[in-house]
Image (cartoon, rainbow, N blue to C red; front, side, top):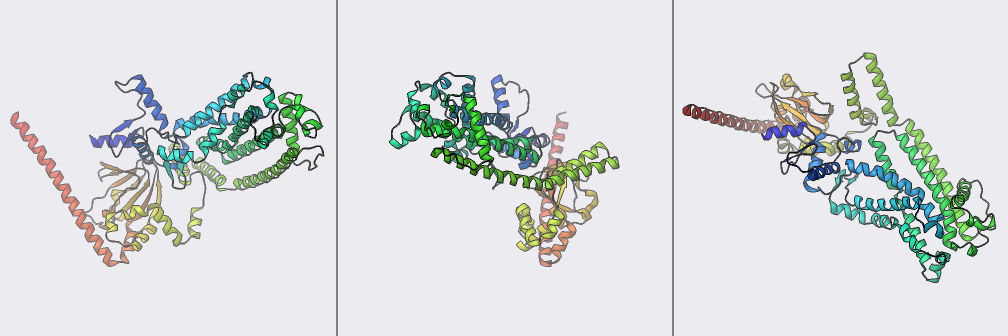
Length: 588
């Protein structure tokens, strides 16, 4: 019965088996007998919080079904209250926050800068409802983020511990998010008269006096800290593009468009905000040398007209269409003009750099990947291959190249064994050293030679890795890096499944001969393995005859012990069956 459960868990990815506690958790079962509607909803919601097996981001981190099952089991067993960063719920929330952040970057500076008159903020309009909704959702995002795990690229590990997640978030970004997400739309309704807005924020700081109008300006300025979330916004957009397989060029163009749009929009608002913060919102108190008073008194214009005037001024300043300084300018006007000019230079450098990157991308490995895939499709059409074979070839190419083409042979030829040995030791050194037969007999130098003699292989589902019909000539030891393989007897009876980090075939590799039992090894899913051929293994052992004799004797002793144990188990089973048969015959 336990074997059947293990097979079912291996065949169906919807069932997650906890290797520590044992029970199977069927997350995708539509109906469970005796389950209430609330429990069904709770199970459905928890399923959304776990790892999404269809996500391309999850596949890029966990490249096999086995790794995904283990991650889901770890999540369910120890961190059930945490939302996985590669879950479907997190993906949906990121899509929502893309719209929220996009609206925030557009409406927030406009609201803070131009809607300062009592008639603008005393009445809650649809514009203020949008701002309030954005602030509320940003507050919800803080609660959501503090309960969501994160992927540590440096250690290649998904952190799901709530305490570590909270400690990492509270260090800096939590306070920025909380301060910038305060619902200033509700606070502004308590400013009920015009005189408080007449006080200049800078004067309040200089005179060390605090008025409610200054406090309101302070809250508005602090809410502009939300601009620091643009990095999160671009990361969410990048995740969505990766999930749906967009080209890298699309990601680049989107990033450039967002950066330019947000920069011009915010500088346009800051042009007017700097004057209002420095001199107050009362037009009668504004310096006559300010650009807002010298050319055209825009204080009495509508908010949209003021924004258009500021946008035009920003456009020719950031675009470096003029470097002249108007004599009728205040100090804050000069500072803003200088900042806009410097930002214009930075934007030009940024656009030039992105253009060069785009040119390089055109001839990069990503583009070569698509070109070679197109050539492979043309070859398939020319040879008139079957649809099944075409799908297998394309699936093999996509998994092997991983959407980035690289000349592996050229790289291997250009690097020496001094680089290959650490790479092999990093990838599968622990697997080889974990084989007790090698660990007890071989030196570190011999194990390093074995690592260099191993070959990387990629097998698709149902591919034959080792054939029992080849006997000792085809004996190979298999180390599973990612994926799942099935072990069959020579008569094609399934014995067991091997998953990530496991191995098989050391006794066939060492002993060989006609007395050994050879197995068929088949890939259950797309699997990445390292194989060690018997011929190459013999070449390594030939250089150390003493070690060769010792490892053969130890392997023979252990194999005979295993064979004797297997015979005892079989005889005990037969004897038990015979006893049952005799007892049944006696009672009959």
